Image (cartoon, rainbow, N blue to C red; front, side):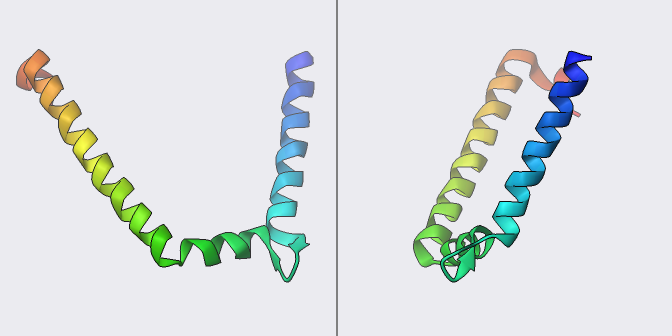
Length: 76
């Protein structure tokens, strides 16, 4: 019963956050619109590119470590 109540409250909380994010204006725009405008800036795009490159390097490192430890047995 307690977990059911906790899940229901979590859903209500999520619904409130989503409502505020998409429909409540902060100034001239909603949080969603502000986020889209920030993400469209050049520094944000550069950061996205750098994160993408770092993610690829990390994935390659993990693959190398996996193959060094387990060989090709764990690779599909």
